[in-house]
Image 1 (tube, rainbow, N blue to C red):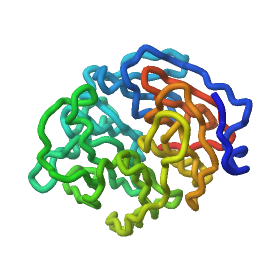
Image 2 (image 1 turned 90 degrees about the vertical axis):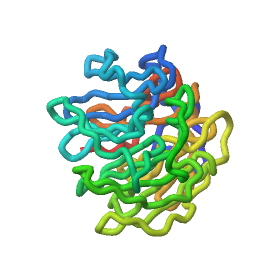
Image 3 (image 1 turned 90 degrees about the horizontal axis):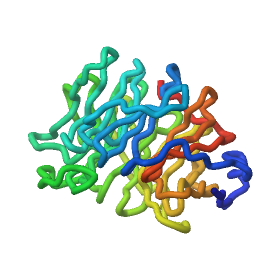
Length: 296
């Protein structure tokens, strides 16, 4: 691997001598990695393989959920319950602590969602997710017509009782993450190759939505997809050539260049300095200097 330096601050993110390690391979298309800070394991999806896998503390990968209904992005809530966006069912589901699945969102305004893609949870439990059309396409989902007519961003209450559309003017909304204080929600648009920022009010509503940063410059394959924030407030977003690292002010520090097309990533390890990448057919890992944030 190599590190593309665009600003000196990139040296605080990952060392020039960092080694990219292939942890596992042989998948169809990996996505949605999340780290459990207590059990110390990483769960990730193989969307076209219709299966979710778990990398255990022993370093071994095992099947976790099959079929997964072509699960994509996942996260944990404050209770350690896993929430997953499912392409095949166009739904958001939560795995309860006893292993049972609860469906939280399937429709908005009487119409079936397109295919929930990525997901985050605010500190008070409100759930935010993106809804592009990728899961209604062949290979990454089940080919079928869309009912919605728009590709939006949504908020749903923890009990699934109320769903709100926050924005409906995206081409293909994809990755999303909160700022450190949860007052700003960043959402990227794969087709437009940029990141937008929304101010989030106490009641969960959103305003704004201006373009915050462009993710267009780089060498190699890639576009805005997975997006997360580290413990210093830097925003990481997949893009051309690998994972782009931006400051809280939107300056691009550099790019962690990847060996394969990379759709998503997550921090793990006891100190949250192991950065895992779901890269097409493989799962990779490097050691970084700046840790991520625990999901709960």
